[in-house]
Length: 146
Image (cartoon, rainbow, N blue to C red; front, side):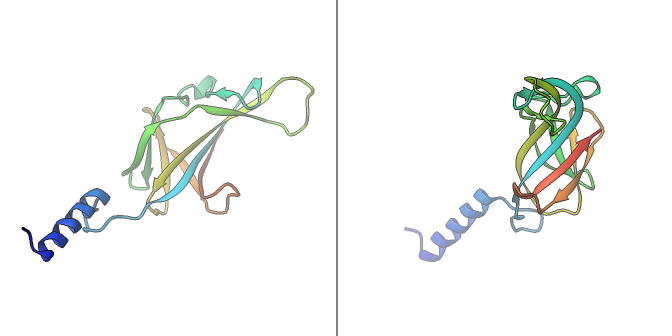
């Protein structure tokens, strides 16, 4: 039967393996944030419906592969984009069901603290993200695609 010290060593080893370790031997803390990308494609659609980028932004769509990187290009998180949501481009009520909209993507992720972040979608050049810690909906990494 293993000694108490051996049992403790085994438990610590299992815990470290489950949490994961960085090169320094300690797990790097990751915090939840939302990557928010607003695609200003001015498409006519009903606000609130699923959408994807149009015209020169067709690469921004549900299931497109993305990588969230740091300033040095190191991958922090990767996955598939969710569907975007159509948001009205103008605040005024135009009195019609379909209005000019933008397509907004929200990607919840957990990332370690960095000074800069970029979003790379498919084989496109990375999009610079602005850090917004004061967002009413929680910390965000934000980009507006012209």
